[in-house]
Image (cartoon, rainbow, N blue to C red):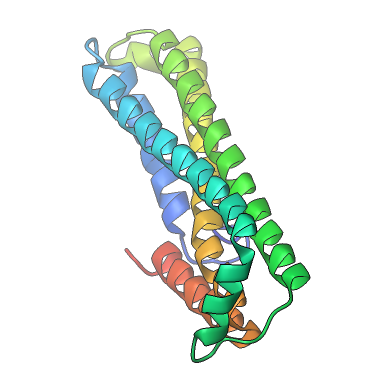
Length: 198
């Protein structure tokens, strides 16, 4: 909610980018040749597919951690801030990480699909020029493409946040204090980027 600008008065990066998405769709409606638009959509889809694949690989790594839990627990115990952990506690932590990464994967997968739908909606926007592009048919087509693009971006951003917080979650494997500190540092970085990067 905060990243969408619904809890704070400051304009978020997400809100600013959503306005640019709308400007993009309005400009696209007046272009006869939409090669640039399809290239941008292709880039968005490829980036989303990369993160979906990365999340899936990380999920596989979590299951590998479960298979090597004895060695991992030994390494964690040797860390300066490492706290002793039982097999059950370690497995619970890994399953928590699995849930975060699975959430990220599904968000990226859904965003990929929505970007694909947006490409179709871009193709459905009639090519109109000047004042003719402000007719109700064109406005509706632009609005649909914009909404789909914004929605895809929202799910992509949710997946990214999950990946970022999974990094903070790794601190829990070392010690609860490290977990809290790493999560707070990540939260501060995300808040700064979302509200103070412009």
